[in-house]
Length: 230
Ligand code: OAD
Image (cartoon, rainbow, N blue to C red; front, side, top):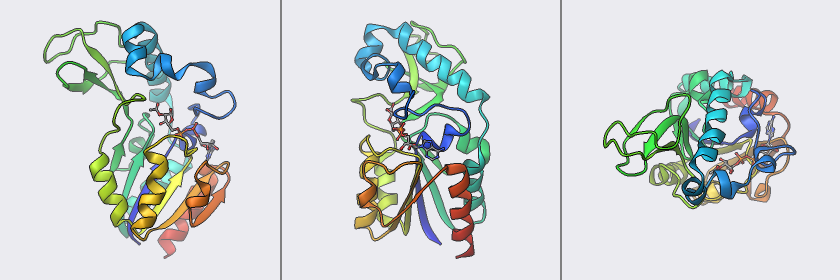
């Protein structure tokens, strides 16, 4: 199977009950990105931003992985190739399903970060403005999530993985947020077979060599079975 890089987005967790961002009724129709997902929004109103992520943290901790998360864990466990999941999701459902190599490029709700000294620790269920950093004691704790205008995490490692990939799959992502939306092009330049699995065609659908449309919980297990058959 070679080297497989799988990019996941909110669509893979939709059937676990976690809302996506841009589908009808999604998070970005209820909240303004500028208010809850930018450093400027946090500086203006930290209470609002904490309450947004506190609610998502509680919801995500109660969610269970679905058949798509489990199938990707099965692909990795089969040891037939090197499987890395690069997720834009801040939930922990890939890990809950048993995936081991997971890069959270947009951070994770499970983490807290000190904006002063960069110390990281496990977030409590509820964070509040002025929450002290356990390392430097500054009132500077924030959720360890990447906001618009900030550099996603693990980018050098991800670009190396994409260049070396034999297969690149994008699952449940709308292809509207960069740099993730350009990963298909990076993988194509490296010679990978690229496949999009999504409910609807993404904004970058024409860049993929293969596309499959439907629910992740149905299509991902089928794709994994095919990959394992070789
Ligand atoms: P979006 O909400 O933009 O897109 C979700 C995608 O999942 C859509 O293309 C849907 O068609 C698809 N989808 C929905 N239900 C599905 C299902 N059951 N099975 C398969 N696909 C399904 O979410 P993302 O692309 O993940 O970043 O958004 C990317 C980034 O934008 C997020 O990480 C977040 C957001 O702003 C930050 O906050 C920095």
